[in-house]
Length: 392
Image (cartoon, rainbow, N blue to C red; front, side, top):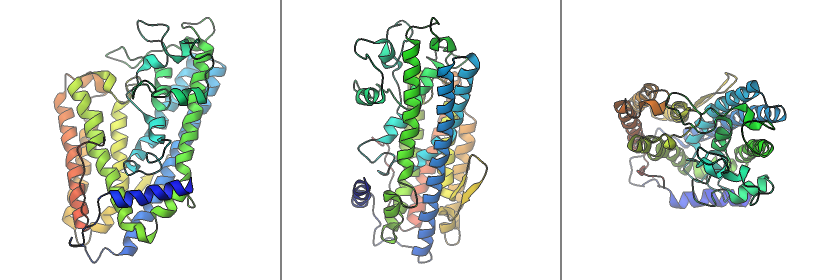
């Protein structure tokens, strides 16, 4: 595994955008200062994944307790734990898009953890088909196990998502068939003689995907430990410029191709709540907000943990503040504008798709503007950097 991550980092150095020798590198931005930025970033990544694991473990515990004794209160506890687990994880999405541990391995942990959109009929019953999904197909799936779900995941295409946060979300909320509320799956779907066939298998499925979520998050986190193979290469003095470009890629690609593009522009065009990132729980507004907060964290080099403690050090603002104050001020203004625009979106998102299109357009424009300003940040750092329209 160590050799794999070292190879991945070396490949990113060859393939990603590179500094141009003719660019006007600011002599005040020393390697020592860059090292501070990279080291602090690695500390933030580790802390953020630790928080994602802590909240995922709380979700895991709630799910196991609920499945052992299904009650209405138990299902609500699972839903609350799921919602709370999303906030730290969403902030980690700023660490994607440069072939790091989350999305640069054969395992493709990002796809196992947070893949969407999800066609719920591959998992469980849906409106009009009470026999749909792995849970109800005992002939093809006589047993449900981690190995079975992993082998079958995305077997029928990219919407054939059988694991991760959104599989858990569907199993807790059920389909969102309502304009004014999230899904309304009853807890009795998990009771023998309750409201749906195969309650035991449904409970088995739910506990397996909850366990797998924690396992996968831990695998990603291990590479960012102080002795982790990926982190060791990432913070090396010989890799500083490339690591800074990778950090910029994470912020830029999340802003433009993913958040403003796949997650917002697509649903604005389709008006289909199935294109919502968290459609079953109606939590998409928070998905947008905490992705944006994750970008802000990285730029400022500051992360507030779930226990209220702060991991803080040298950020991009510190690199630019003295000799490129205007670029830095503009970047922070763009970040603030994006946060404000996202907070102004309708909640839940699906209710405003036809009634408040302007709010979506304003948010998309603001997030794209922050991506464009990141290019100016890179230029001030003496780096040649571009953000593609799509991350595909």
